[in-house]
Image (tube, rainbow, N blue to C red; front, side):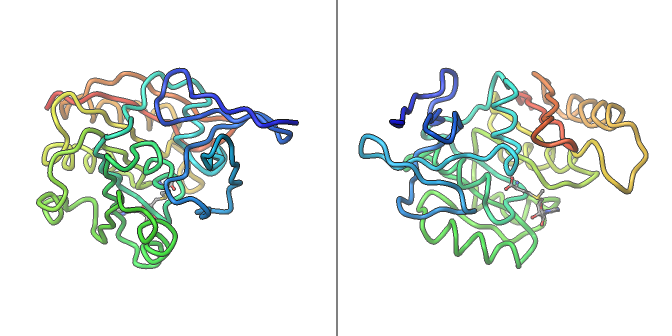
Length: 231
Ligand code: SAM
């Protein structure tokens, strides 16, 4: 079967590839020849695409579940909290492209090593920050103003972390994507209650909630919240 690649109808920088393996999301690889987490690389029309796995990335899952707005586009400046080893961050780096910038914060030195080796060393539009995301004053000067705040730190205090970072770095009218951990094995709390609490806290911190989306069947534990920031 021949390979077909179409731009995603709503999100610039996101593609839909179709080949013998099926129809999948992808991004154009900013570091050709390199995969970040074992994803397939597909060449078409002189461009290399990286298949984007929704079971590994909540943002890909949210796109497949029909999220209406991801705020990201070529040229966007992004602050990414909970960068980990860069699975999703690397696709964000592809989407914003050479004219954009992604600042990736994580407080774990172990994952930061992997982020450096697999992502930052090969992509000029990524900046690693080994810091605690609940202390944004330590890196706000380095980051400056961003268009999009992506938060996936799996902490009960996520909404407060998002608000503190937004206050210092997110431009008015900018976008927030926050992966709420609604279900966890050590909690008996109703997932809907958890999401309601996070959404309320965000609304009290200057965010207008646009949507909140369950990610099943790709991810059973998280809900993706999209919001715009009014300060
Ligand atoms: N967003 C990643 C992806 O999709 O590829 C996965 C992120 S993982 C669920 C959560 C990450 O947040 C972990 O790497 C953890 O070290 C980091 N983290 C948790 N609390 C943090 C904090 N307060 N500051 C910085 N990083 C934190």
